[in-house]
Image 1 (cartoon, rainbow, N blue to C red):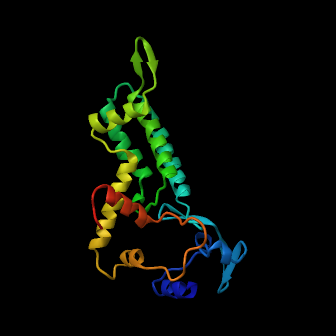
Image 2: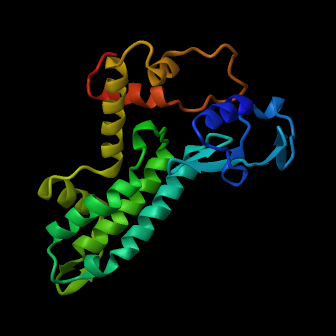
Image 3: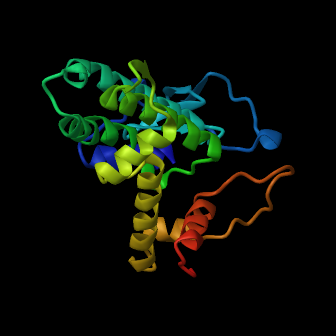
Length: 228
């Protein structure tokens, strides 16, 4: 495969750079072979890794989505602290701060979310991060001269019904359904559609099967009354 890629690159005037290229195996644990920390192909040596970032998305050997979720939260948190002066400003209204959150922070958090397979634990991580930002925006509540933090239901009520916004998990699920509809309408030979519709030749390994992307989409579809 590397030789084919290298020859195709040379024909286009390109060159495969060893320092920017990595090798990651995806063989199941029970059949995995230890190939070491480096792998040599055609006099080129590449680093063997367990995970790497490609197109700003983390691809891991074990295909654990929580690592990508945590990475996106860290990136969104850096963006939030970069805007902390604006988010703490008393001169900006809550509506303006919500707009800042949706425009600058939320896209970092939801980048590539159309293809995410999220569990309940992943959803909880996303909601905790979003609530922290919304608490900063909405502030506390004064009752009988005593200030207290807003409860979760108070935050969501204000965010959803007063400002007409969608919770981060709902937004991700909507994007996944939209992408699923795009695949369903695409041509039969479309590579993403072919991968989605393909059936594995081998059986699953022992133990509880991992949650698949199509399982999450099917569950979301049933909740909104979509048959297929």
